[in-house]
Amino acid sequence: MENFRPTKAQINLGAIKRNTEKLIKKYTGYKYYMAVVKADCYGYRGFDVVKAMLDGGANCLAASLLEEGVALREHFPCTPILLFTPVPATQLHIMKENNLWVTVATQQQADIASAIDGLNVVIRANGGSDILGGPTTPAEFHKLWDTLTDGKCNLKGIYLHSYNAECDEDTCNEYTTFEAMTAGLPIESLDLISISNSLTLPRYGKKEYANACRLGNIIYKIESEDDDLENTFSLTSEVLNVFTLKNGQSVAYSRAYTATKDNTYIAAIPIGFGDGFSKTNIGRDVFINNKRYPIVAVTMDITHILVDETVKADDVVVLIKDTHHLDEIAEHIHGATEEAICALNKRVTREYID
Image 1 (cartoon, rainbow, N blue to C red):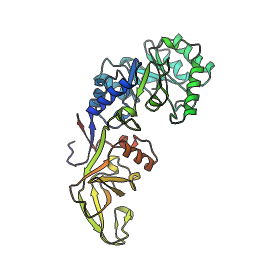
Image 2: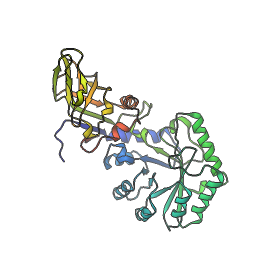
Image 3: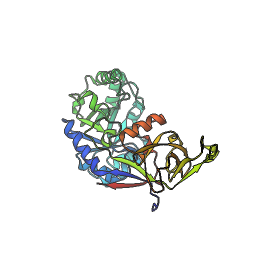
């Protein structure tokens, strides 16, 4: 569907490639640099985004859904692809047919996967608070390991997904749990060993036994304080029209906003919750002519901004500016930093620049 609105997300493929190159140069010593492209590249969408990462030096991919894995395999036939989310037993044959690496977190999943000849398996280790559960004691973990190594599947690797990288105590305890569970096991024989993600990689350095790192948020410069990296995303639109309210007059459904003085200027912007631009945005700022203005109402197709007399029709509105603005938005909506981008649906045109 052709989009005639001025509302668009701009994705900088050149910046994504350069960010990948910089990260690989900065964090040396890994065999695998795994670009995380789940949720359709964090809402960036498009295989051009994936290609930019591979062109920048990433040599492995990670997604979540089987649909994502199959689509990636069609476009990138030779690249190792890991799925973070386990799939039902009835779909494991699709994983094998597409040469995808399946995640196994629990003993039950290991029992099923081990019986499939040639299936590539990667263990998701539980450091204490993993979203998929899994064993946290050496005895239970060794049982899971033995099931996979004695079975018909191919045990390709193991990874640890940090759950609270900002907390040194939690992360160190997680590493200690991982090392205790794997003690005595020949993990060095595995093709892939990863304990670092975007948040732990800059904070805790490389463990000697690890040969892979996962580049998720950091590759997009989301939730990153690295000044060497470039912003890769912006969301813009234009002012449809500006109108004024008198004191006591309201705008939008259920009187979403009521003016407290005469000559209150309101700008209408063509984006709304029908685009995935949630009502939780009400109260946060956007930028028009490099000046901040607050959102006061969000409808299905129109968002209203409280502005002043300097704002005119056709002025550019920056709805998401850069990584610092994303941090601010996340705090406002009490959500994840990447949530504002992931929420944007296919109604919002993605424009790719290099």
